[in-house]
Every structure is written in structure tokens, then in C-alpha cells.
Length: 397
Ligand SMILES: C[S@@+](CC[C@H](N)C(=O)[O-])C[C@H]1O[C@@H](n2cnc3c(N)ncnc32)[C@H](O)[C@@H]1O
Image (cartoon, rainbow, N blue to C red; front, side, top):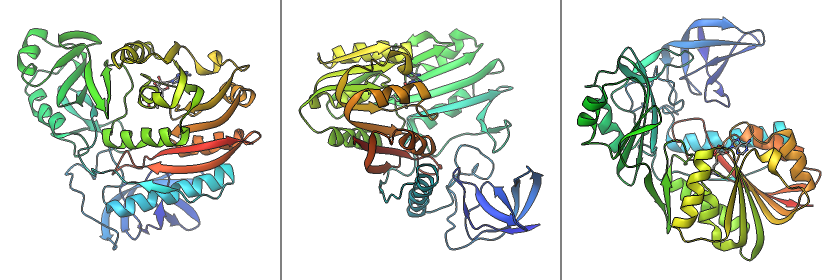
């Protein structure tokens, strides 16, 4: 069956129609005409895979990556970068209309690097082979390199391929300041692996235990230093993280008495914006991030940031007042308890950093009794994928 692709859905899959029912086809873009295979009827829609590309339109650009047609790592590499940005902006506009009934027209800040921007890759290992998962399945696509990650990370992949990885299930490679951290899950011959990898890595972990080198690696954002443990959260695109955190700083303005920083990770934002306020209070669930936060606050010689460990919804003190509350939750957004707490706390503004525009729009809608969306901006931290980071400021009514 032949299908014409009309537009992209929110996860970067092409949308076509079979009679009046929608069909989602990954690895296709608008103006494509494709013959499809694996058609599956899902009640309200179909899914299918592209079999043969019969025609490619004016938006099509050849993907640089040889694994692109099968790999689930990225979704829209066949669009020019300008078209990717247009898609992301219009997607967020649609989502805000649908989930928050708000008309927006946000600026989008492009990534300075379209490729080789990621400081982290999570590789799956099966029967000794390293790769990423295929689209729609958990089948492994063995890879030699990934065009989204830093070159230094790619240099390690062929070396890993020389090691016996039969009893390994996952390998994470990270790069900060040209240094490599490797986190291995499974069983290996520790002595052999260290002797091979020590020429490439500054830090090697096996099942969360340090087996070689440095416990943490350092990253630098402007004048701030961050020492990062293997299990702590750190954004993957450094240049755009600096732009994003500077936007948080702008939205905060100067001279705040008291800021609350929720889902604060390693207090990365608080440390970056610390001069904007007399006191910053962070809340974070992950003990590794909290430990790093406390150490990094000291290492940067700051004395106005405190971090509490625990669940945001449970630790919110609703009788307090703040000049601003920063929230930067995971993709699931804010839970009900957190939102009801935020409505009780008196804060002049909420600055919401989000990696999922759908939960962001839903949460803005749920907070609308007391907070009005004032400004919104998009930062593309993830070129070639459907993901987009959004930041907005809401003012108390
Ligand atoms: C998107 S990250 C943001 C981290 C940090 N703001 C930054 O810029 O690096 C989300 C953080 O929320 C934390 N988290 C997830 N659920 C949480 C909860 N219920 N309470 C507190 N923190 C939570 C995660 O551990 C993670 O560090």
C-alpha cells in the first residue's frame, strides 16, 4: 500500500491516511510517498513501517548516519536543521492550544552544533555486541559510532568492541572537559578491561563501583565548576545548557530574597544563578545528585544554597513565601500534590524548565487559578530528535 505523508506527529513520526484513519510511519517526513509494511490496526489509528520510498519531497535531506533508517536513537535527521526547528516550534504551539487552550508564538534558540553535541550515550549490549535499540522494537542495532555524541565518546566504541562483553548488558559513556567516564553493567574480566580502557578513560565503573580512576568528572559552565558522579543528572548538551540557565537568570532578575529550586538535581541551576538571590533552597530526590550538589556548592565557595533530599510533593512547605520558584521536573511533569502545594505557596513567579511540552502545558493549565503564563522560549538541546526543551515564566495573578 502506498501512502503520502502529510505532517509529523509529536514524536517525529510521519502521519498519513488510510481512508479516514491515521497511520503513523516512523522515519518518514512530510511530502514523502512511501510503500508501507507491517501495517497494524490499533483501533483508533494504524502503525506501519516504510518499505520503499517512492518519492521524496523538497524537505528531504540525506541522513549522514548509516544506521538512521533502522536505529531508534533519532527521528528527524532527514529534515534540514531549519525544518527541524520549524517542526519543534509548531509542535509546541499545537500542544499549548490543545492542552492549555493558550495561543503562543515562542522564539526557538538553535543548537550551535547539529551533530556531536551529546556528552552521554547509553549503549545496549547483547551477546557481546554493542548498539542502540531499533525503532518500535527492543532489537539491537549494532553501531560503530553515533553522530549525535561527542567525537571523543565515539573513539571509545571500537575499543569496547575488542573486549569480551558476552556477560555485559549496558555501557554508558560520558565526556566532560575531554575526559571519559565509562559505566559498565554486567560481568567482565576487570584486570583485562582496565588495561585496555585506561588509555581512553579517566573513570571506569562496574555495576556502580569505581574500578579505575577518578570518582567524579568535572564540567565547567561559565565560571562555575560541577563535579559529576555517575548517577547524578547533568544536561546532555553543554552549550545549550549555558543558554538555558542564562535564560533562567534573566527570568529571575536580580535582588531576590528567597528562591525555591525544585527538582534541583546537583543544584546545577542554583549554582549558576546564585548571585540573583540571598537564599536558594533546593529539593531533589536522587541521593547521588544531592551529595554532588552539596559538594559542588562548597567547591564553588557559595554559602547561600541549601539542598534537601526527598520528594518535592512531600517536602514543600506551603506556608513559606518566595520571590521565585524554579521547577525542572522529569518528563512526567508535576504531580498533583506538588501542584496543589504550588498553588498554596505565595511566590511572585514560577520559572518552569521542561523537557516535555505536553506535561508542561497541562501543568500551566492546572496552575492557572493563580499563575498566568507571561513568557515562553524554546531551546533545542536535542537536534535530529523530536525532543525540545521549553522554559517559561508564570506570574502570580
Ligand atoms: C530534568 S532533571 C533537572 C535537574 C536540574 N534542575 C538540572 O538542571 O540539572 C529532574 C530532576 O528531578 C529529580 N526528581 C524526579 N522526581 C522527583 C521528585 N518526586 N522529587 C524530587 N526530585 C525529583 C530527578 O532525580 C532529576 O534530578
